[in-house]
Image (cartoon, rainbow, N blue to C red):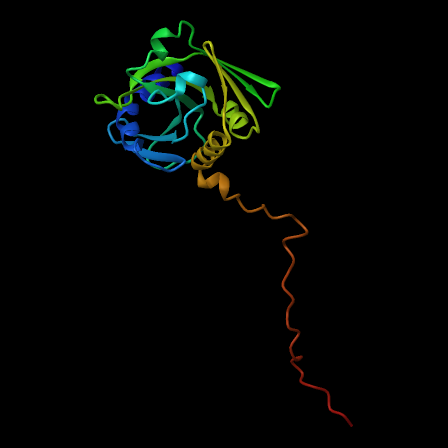
Length: 217
């Protein structure tokens, strides 16, 4: 049930957020948006560099990487539980229509295999014009996302396509991980006092005895 709710929240936020990210030249752009009706904050990453897919990605038919997560309220108090990876392609391309199986498999650092299942939720990230894009999404746990973001090599199989994350993709995912780390985690709490070590009494000034200094005869 919670996966269904997560998917609904993600898809509801995508169109407005992604429109604001397109057309920006930075290597990666992160946008934050608060929905006051749902009391939910969305954070979305768009990586400007497209994937290298051979002849398919030539010209106006690139494939882009996104990441998205949500948390309750305006202030992030703890790590989000889930993160979504998104892949978007021009709406007038045949990528999603021709891809019979949309299963996403990742090979992380040549050892860890992540089977994220079928991409879900085809969504319009821009509704009109020559730049109209369509995206599909895979949901994962925060722990799986951390493994991907901290990896030195990520190989991808999406349907029949195989490609890899570039240095720019990995660096942007690491920046996104930093962006979804609450300040309460970054600022570590003070160490609790240690008995016998931290309760050392302050030295006192012995002063002068009440009887005054002794007379020297």
